[in-house]
Length: 375
Image 1 (cartoon, rainbow, N blue to C red):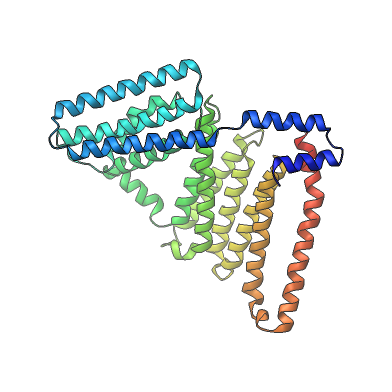
Image 2 (cartoon, helix red, strand yellow):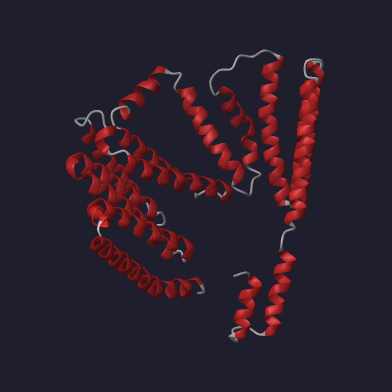
């Protein structure tokens, strides 16, 4: 149902007056972004840019190196001047677009210098060099897109560079080569710990970007754990227990250092993954059940977080995923029932019961969520 239909329905039920309905419609029409206009601008810029690239590529060999470098510097200075001007004028969206363009130009300039002076490629050194040169742009960002690209590029290239040193390679091999689950868990812990540090900085764009990558890492790790069990990815079980004991200490440090329990979803999720990994190693025969319990527990944490933060859509998605995981467990245990008529009837009744429970939970919790969101 679109906005006009909703407002008409609200006015019909006397929730709003006809005058309020018109005022809301007028306001929404005024704040709508001209999507067609922006789309045409993007297409025109894209076509012009591709045209310039095509012309330059066709005559690349005949263009002197000095001309290439001078044109590159002029382009960099022009875009930098545009960034400074837009920053003074407060045009956020155009400023963010020019910041991204400038970062791309920096990478292109590194490639151009390497081509002109015949510099050899050395792993991800160019990406690391780009990260260093483009770091000042992070101080100008108010949107999370560029930090979201810069952060993984910097971490990936820095780790690639450190692997060139034998001491770093030995440390990583000693820590992670014998227990991949521990490596993933520790990576999630580091992401959560660093997010807490970044939250202390007055940089909302950095915080949003880091939070997005942290949530993505938790989702990918959960799917990975569910697909590959502990025992197939732990080469040596004898050295695993000291690692998980140290992980428990790290988890306790993260919990007790957060006095206000602001970051409890990440801490609880780390505790659930820790428990799954330890139980999976201690009781290999029950690892399938432990994996299902881990997924349901993590989704329950997401549901609880959505309820506490009044996010109805996230709550809907999490609870539906819990129902689907329960359905998967039912198929694993009673899948043979689906081959008979009586079994299909029983299965239908089970699913009907799950639907009823979900609807009852929804009717009970949604009014509370809306009430809290309106406070």
